[in-house]
Length: 100
Image (cartoon, rainbow, N blue to C red; front, side, top):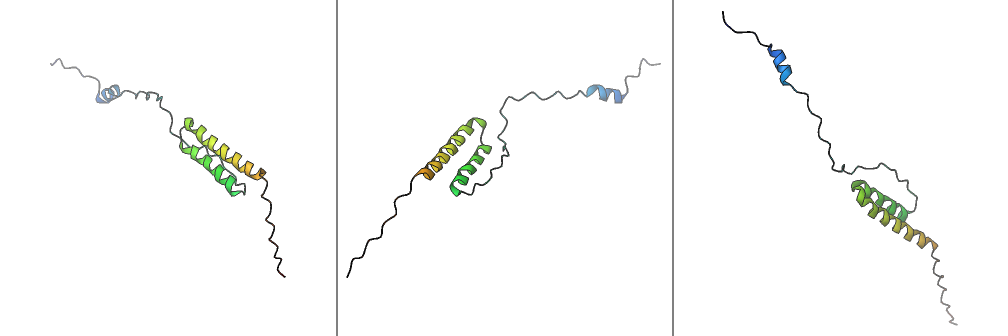
């Protein structure tokens, strides 16, 4: 007789060898920029619509860069409103032709 004793079967060995995967370590890196998905409705005023389209640039920037875009758009919209308040130049009066 031998001193050989049966060990655990191979299925049990395989199960014992497989460890559950550890959860991934949390990342403290900022998430990449994602579009906000805010729809911009055209106003019908081409210059204003162009300024509002500039807001889409913020979708591709990190959050700390949004302020620059917002301030640029705000400045442009103020310029457009100021231009609407400006009085038009007086109409040119036609020169009179006093030929006889």
